[in-house]
Image (cartoon, rainbow, N blue to C red; front, side, top):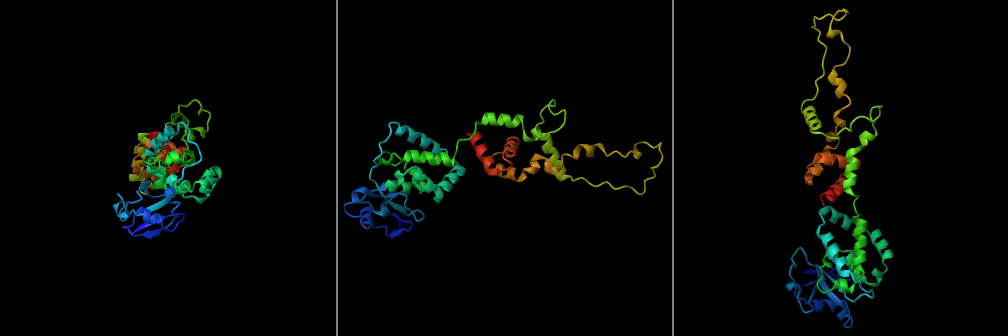
Length: 307
């Protein structure tokens, strides 16, 4: 059995021994047959071809669509082919996060309404709406062999609009990264008269990582006063035992609490980034710091830097 959609979200169920023409005749008049075709994954099915003979039609993929192939009244621009090639190159480089952003926009009813307002031609050519709300068709039509782009050139600027809205261009990353490395947020918030003349403090170093791991594995043990100490405590002539100053290590380490160390503060986010293949913690922490720990924004920036 196969599911066939036509002008509705409810599929029609047909046996696989039917031909495309037999299915079309159940939905359109004889006069309209020349303008309609049956499609599977963006490929037109021959009018005399049986569903059982369609390559790739498996138990898990038995969804077909009936689409009107009437040509658009819009004239195709002279550089249409070049625009399609550029779109195709961009789509081929999609990673899963970009696919997710695209599908989020395409399946948002409010966004589709806005798109129709921006491109009224969509209402004149219903096939455009069918394609623009089916992600498998959206990309397949770029390669559609019978000339969908030539018959419906409006598809290209609409696709470009969706791409610009769902995946806006990233900032200039070389300048962005240089600025973040040289002026991390903690340095800009530092106080003191010597801040301007002091050399910039590196945000994250191997020593800091080593210290953080050591403290995690060896938590500090509270020091208790010994009741059996025989050293005098009231004599002014005693040495360092009478000193009331805190140990030097405490004075130095007090500001660097475990929670303030970047690798601890962003531990969960770093784990997620590691799972995505981003293992350079120096860069990861700079990016996380710039987006207040938002993992999705950080991944978008890191993917753009990788490109």
